[in-house]
Amino acid sequence: MKTKKSHSFIYFIFIAVTITLMLASCTAYIEERSKTIAMKRISSFSFPKLSDDLEYHGLAHSISQSLSYLQKIPEDRIFVFGKDHYDTNHMIRSLEFFLEYIKQNPSRRELKEFIRSNYHVYRSTGTNGNGKVLFTGYYEPHLRGSFKESAEFRFPIYSRPNDLVSIDLSLFSEKYDGERIIGRLTEQTVVPYYERKEIDFENALEGKAEPLVWVKDPVDIFFLQIQGSGKIYLDSGDVINVHYHTTNGRPYRSIGQLLIEEEKILREEMSMQKIREYLREHPEEMENIFNYNPSYVFFKTEPDGPLGNINVKLTPGRSIALDRKIFPAAALAFISTKKPLINSAGNISDWTDCTRFVLNQDTGGAIKGPGRADLFWGNGHYAEIAAGHLQHPGKLYFFILKPEV
Image 1 (cartoon, one colour):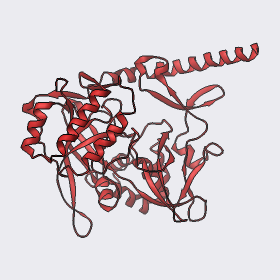
Image 2 (image 1 turned 90 degrees about the vertical axis):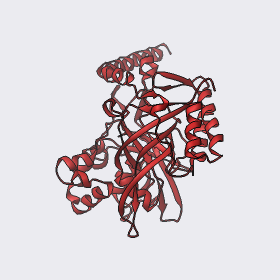
Image 3 (image 1 turned 180 degrees about the vertical axis):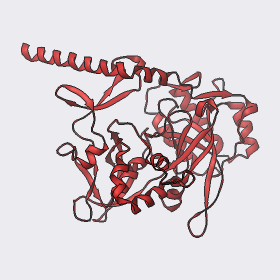
Image 4 (image 1 turned 135 degrees about the vertical axis):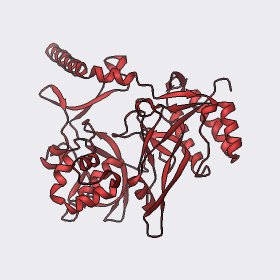
């Protein structure tokens, strides 16, 4: 018994020292992130023109989803809005107050006066503090698949590997609150987890991860990982929801940016659809292009979906994904950007204003800093077109009930 305890203690010390060394290598990055001011409170003279292009449709549902999240977390959790801080109870009261008001379907003038009288408004600092936010989109893809591997269904969607470890750094120091590192334990040492090349092309997951389902096309899997969730229509006639579970901890690198830099797709023509087209026409390049992005997503099945990172169902056109480390989860926001107009042939004919209230309910590997936002479009043809082509600048605002109200 004594020997076993001694070995356990030595092993714990070894792991602690290993993690301390890993922390030492990334301390500067974490401290820099902690100083990020994501938004600033603005005066009523700087308020945006508040008009909801969806005429409040779907907003009540999205607010109720945020409330369901807030009602399950500790009452004293703090949410940061620029230099101001609010607890969970205040977040709940703020959303409930707004929800009751929009049931009246207020006019633009009435809405502006309501916000001016009752809410503090904050604007995202955007890229380099200029207030500009790059908006992109995502959607819920639908794939064909099978629980059995076959000549038709050859490519696996993997569950979380059994050798993957996720380390909560806040257990070692409060300054790392919300920070995690992902890796694997090998020979009593924590090392980075396998990257995409090792997983997809070197069979690194053999005996370590079970395929949830098998699908036809590796391109579909790659974009499913970017979207974070999807529906799989099985050859048995059943449908399952697959949802993001975790990643391999490797940094996300955009293959779209790669194809632009290599002058294979013009920047002004870049879209998800254009990338798919290029891969279909150049299958011999697929492996190298995919491996440029070492990040890899593992999935789990859910009875419903798609779900955001706060584990609530996303609302098409109302849920946005932001950097979870700097923006308050579940918060009410307002966006001003563009949306596509589709002609009878199913193609984009023009772009028009997209101004609406949204809720911060998700995050993404490519969504980093106060200058990025990702709008969830739902599923179907329009959603796929909008998600694939939206790359427009815009503005992002947040609302919180004044404490004195």
